[in-house]
Image (cartoon, rainbow over all chains, first blue to last red):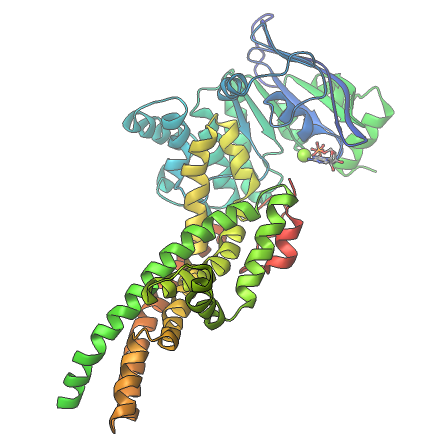
Length: 259
Length: 241
Ligand SMILES: Nc1ncnc2c1ncn2[C@@H]1O[C@H](COP(=O)(O)OP(=O)(O)O)[C@@H](O)[C@H]1O
Ligand SMILES: [Mg+2]
């Protein structure tokens, strides 16, 4: 288990009854997800169950069809009041997103990747932005690679640049969508270490992951998502060692290689 | 030796005309081609299809026919053009047709994930295009565009057919009226060769730079990276929003 938070904290993010369909296909069928400040929730579930769709709804890369989202105690979206472009942009600067496929800007160096939105979204000076970027890239163990382009970096290194890029916006919450799934197994450990440090340092996080050991060590709570619904929710111990639902048990066993 | 110097003083102004024709027609062609590339990426068929038709017609027409059409055809509509202007308009249109496809593919090759990353960082749309999309497009498009420049440069020799004398024209004109046709052709050929070799060399260097974008250990989100430039008729039809 990660270092627990002290006492009950205020709710930072509250998503209620989130629904989303693509055409006739209902992907999310009413998801409730509350997250306290400093809390880390891991989401597990079979491929295609809607994990990516859910966290993409939380920063409006996808628009939910139904439900409501509160952030920092304020209603920022519900099905009756669509969000304005400027408001969704403002929201996204508070939400750091890390993608499965890194999505670094290929024409830019590692340093530029981390600095670009600091300058062009937050309005920091180039110097202040670069200083902050160097600090963050050092923190994720990449101070040797500031001037390399994404194509010259390994998957694990690219993902750490992507994490630094998201952190550079000083987000209030970080979303990780299977951050290690596209990385060779032996290169994952560095990325997971960075994420663990973040969680233990009190960052509010949601991580979609198949790394059960990581979720055990670093999550406060685990959600099992299947068929567009949250099937079960509990502490890492409850979910991984003593799941109540048979569906959860089957999934956990299958991923852990126990038949 | 005297002949070479004398020939060069005759041919170099012709080469200059060739270069001018190339630069102006390529400039016209790339601006139109970039617009065409944007339109070919439009999500609406009603926008894409007419552009596709126009591009196919211009690519189907031999450049010589387009030139004749502009130079001899337009005066019938009371548009009379200077020879040089007719050449750069005709070749500009042909270049536009070929580069539209290059730009279309280059614009489409910017991975969607990079736009999403830009969105998630709160970057505005215009900044995303300027800071993320455009550098990518230029890097990807420059090598094939240089290939078009080489072809356009050699294509300017067609201008002789409407009496515009550039490098080929000057060489043939002199060679045919003297006993020096063969050496004059060789001299002109050598000049063409020097210019195209230079361009090809730049093309190879820029190609290497472009490959770095997709090279190394980059792992896309399962989507296939495009190799080269796909043909218009299949790919552009498929673009959907
Ligand atoms: N843009 C889209 N259009 C249509 N279907 C989609 C789209 N995005 C995802 N889906 C479908 O939604 C389902 C859930 O996808 P996703 O949220 O990516 O699942 P997960 O991340 O849990 O693997 C899948 O069946 C997927 O094919
Ligand atoms: Mg997913």
